[in-house]
Image 1 (tube, rainbow, N blue to C red):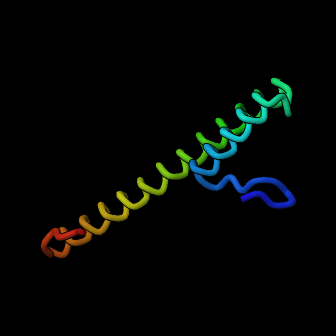
Image 2 (image 1 turned 135 degrees about the horizontal axis):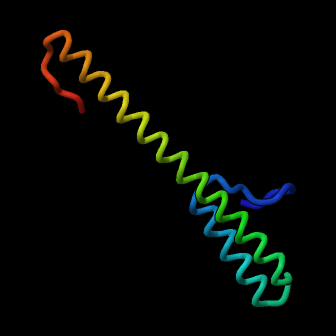
Length: 82
């Protein structure tokens, strides 16, 4: 997961791993509390962004299904959307 530039933070699982690592580093005295707070703050911002992106994607799928249903209604076709 880690590379020369840092950690990949592309999923909630990645964020969780980074947060666990931060907690352990803080407990061992490897980082200062200010750095741990900063990481936590930034991880929370990224978590909210990931959630927002997921919600937007789900809404897009629903909107597409609704549009498909509306088109079928206009054509008099059965409303069988998977």
